[in-house]
Image (cartoon, rainbow, N blue to C red; front, side, top):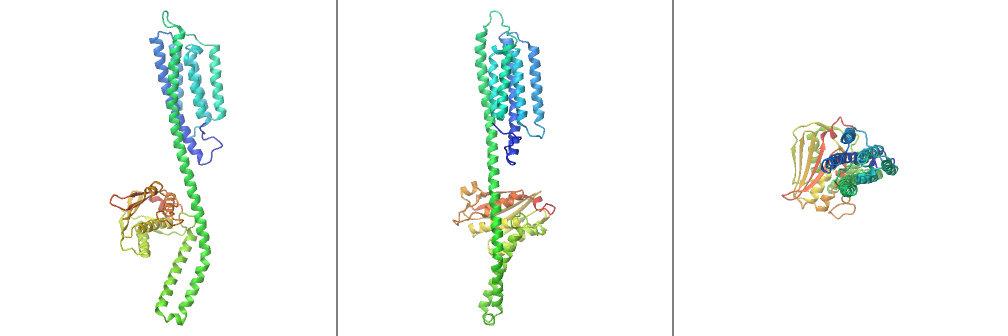
Length: 437
């Protein structure tokens, strides 16, 4: 049984996928009915004109016209945004059973070998419907068949032609083949829909797990930042006292080391403050505005000043320079990529930016050994690292999730000329000063 959007057991994330799957299943039913219409027309033509069996063509044509009209309604239904429900699928299959009953009534009733098509309706119901509706479909099929045993139009066989038993055996063979072919086609497509739905559900579960991981990391980082605040402040006071002590101030080398220590403590305090401001948020609330060119150039220059690589370069390929939010999370993501590139390639790191319409692209390239296959296939999964450090491999994980929160995506590849390339692609609207923070 395939759940539909009205199934109360579905979660909020599963309901949209179930609705999409139910819509696709209704589309498969629509296509199956067109095949059925064609098959019925061919069968009627063979029986009437090939076997010379007298059939009420006008009445059967009217039934087929009703069937075509019902299928046309289903086609129009697919254009509505409302989700396809289990009740709708049940009504659709019941309508098909009634149409089949009308055709069988006009062509021999229970003596018609195509009564085996009732089994097709029941099997489709077992695949598509909830338990109550499946049994309801069994009841509909049974009632229709029992109704045929009570009233039907007998076949009028031509004199000198094949007897009824011979016709029944031939029709049973055709009916069995038709059942088998239609079931294989339909079930194969339904299974494809199910596999696609399961893959999307797995992706949603993976994303939920990653987001939960980020929340826990944010809580830990925030807690650590709070705990570090007091000892850093104490160190700052002690270093300030040391700087003013005459004995230490006279030693120029020691005094310079004290100043260096104070600068590093101040930097640690700035980092802690930034963590507290942006913990758990994709965009810091105190983020200011800047032009896109100055923002990206500033991110790169600040990183280069901190890491001091002489072989790093930035290529500005921006065709425009709009005003954007100086997003701290994106800045940290770019910095992580540059750090990773420098660790892998001390001999060359490059950052390139480009703007195509509303699409901002940032590429970070290096001249290192490139990514192993397992990193490329599992890009963005936590704790995937080639550095061998415990707890490593969170850099790309955080980058992927930050960019995804901004509506973008991250891709990676190994360059033909050697080294690796990581590309950030995100809509410029994600950084617009009008976008909600």
